[in-house]
Amino acid sequence: MKHYDAIIIGAGQSGWPLAGHLPGAGWKTALIEADVMGGTCVNYGCTPTKTLIASAHAIHQARRGAEMGFSTGPITVDMRKVKERAQQRVLENRQGLEGWLHNLDNLDVIYGRAEFESSNTVRINGEVLQADHIIINTGTRPAIPPIQGLETVEYMTNREILNLDTVPEHLIVIGGSYIGLEFAQAFRRFGSEVTIVEMMPRLITREDEDVSEAIRGIMEQEGIAVRTNSKCIAVEKRGEQIAVAMDCKGEGRKEVVGTHLLVATGRRPNSDIGLDKAGVRVDERGYIVVNDRLETNVPGIWVTGDVNGRGAFTHTSYNDYEILVDILVGNDARRVSDRIMTYGLFIDPPLGRVGMTEKQARDSGREVLVAMKQMSSVGRAIDKGETQGFMKFLVDAQTQRFLGAAVLGIGGDEIVASITNLMAADAPYTVFKNAVHIHPTVTELIPTTLSDLKPVS
Image (tube, rainbow, N blue to C red; front, side, top):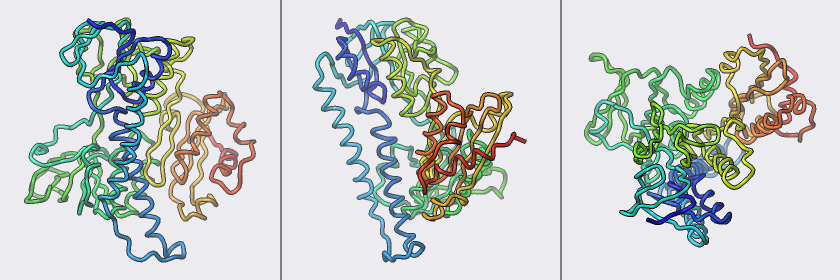
């Protein structure tokens, strides 16, 4: 039985950095990957999707020539080249990781599916490996809901849709949250007719209602049909097309018929790796339970990334790496609870979010102040002809600290980081309000907005 100081299961956004760090600290390490190096972000998530979205944005901007005072002629989309561009970005990142990791001393890179044999052993490719520390970084996969008739049609998840090399005539998206919205807008800009079907009363329900409604307006303004409150969804094959029922009652049921179907209804954890043999606890959804130090209930077994249910983003997974490497070979000072949750929705214009929503702030029992500004009042947005969305800031009236922010509009995904930094520094909002910012920018209007803070009604 081969012994290691650490076995890392999964080469996602905390797995590969750990594999790059621990050997240099003198740890004999094994990195096990069942698929391809880099995890979801590099191969099926951030890298290819944001490259795809960038192509869609350029196409959209080209179509605005008349508005901006120039002419480009007819715009045609070569989906094969769009796909190849995205795949090239994937290959560059993946091959870079592989080349680096395979050449590290003190590290064994092993491909195959690992399963626990006990609390300190795993089986991989018929061999049993033992370690003092086992780190699980297995991520998540698409969650496929029990939709009637879904098994009778060819549907796509966020992985398969990246393989399209033609523009769908009519793309139906089941799911009105982050993944579904980003693909819906991108393919509408590529030239597809697009319909979003969502069971809930509104899109992206984790956000405040005003954010949801503004995002719906952005989708509909681009010609995307949005069907919320679709309480009963059923699917059937109809010749070469796919019919999706949104209301299954009687003969008058509502339906939409398209050529392609994307199921974007959330994620589920990849925790089916024999955890029962190790005695590791999971919650009711299958996420592995960890404490503030990323420890499971079994000493020596740690969990990083999406599979621990403590974050669902590349940046939270990478932060898990930073926390754990500090615990294992550093000064053991960092904790998951130090993290201020921030994330983005990368539609156009993007949404940048940090901290609490307005509803969460209200429900917290604090005395909350709120300030808003429409992007249509921001000079930089007007100059660029991108005036959709708004900024909203939440402040604790007693401590004068930011509680949260939503910036839906041009540059929102970058602008919100300035609020994140102040929250991390535990600085009062007045630091931002009294600072001088560059003109003309979107950020320069935030101090003016903060001057109009009012108690929530």
